[in-house]
Amino acid sequence: MRIIWDLDGVLCNTYETFCVFLEDHHGIKAIKDQKGMFEDRFGITSKQVKELFDDFYKHDQELLCPTMSYARDVVSELARRHEQYIVTARPKHTRENTKFWVYGRLGLSIDGVFVVSGADKGKFGQAIGADLAIDDMPHHALEYKDAGIDVLLYDAPYNQHQEGIGRVLSLHDVVRYVNKW
Image (cartoon, rainbow, N blue to C red; front, side, top):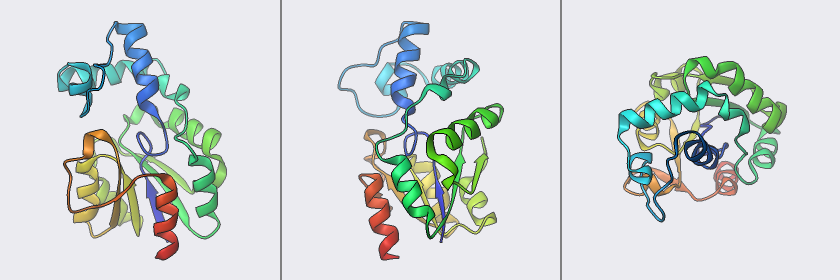
């Protein structure tokens, strides 16, 4: 089986590092107990979110992000029988840092890392012959679904409204799903 993993919000805990960066560099604090997208959590516009993420990446902050709990273990376990790829919508200029982070934090269990900013992840998944994709962003999950790729939505506060796509609550749920395949 060929598995596509999203990076930020699935294998990489970008949110914590982004929160620290926003507070330290821009004086912006997350709104306590606010769920939803970054706009809701920080009380800023979509344009501001993009600009702040651009600044985050400009300062190489993605290198500081921790893995999600059990990410390395799950990726290593699935690597025994499956090909695995990272397909991320990070900006293209982060390609080298992204690869450095993936191989440093997740090990050599990943068969390829693709930074596809602005591209349709579903079409990319078709091009590499993916069987399954795991993503936390509803619009990317729908791209995979529309491309005929089985997809699991990694549960997050900002994707609760999405229906019609299989949902996993943990990385261990992905292993259980793949083992039933």
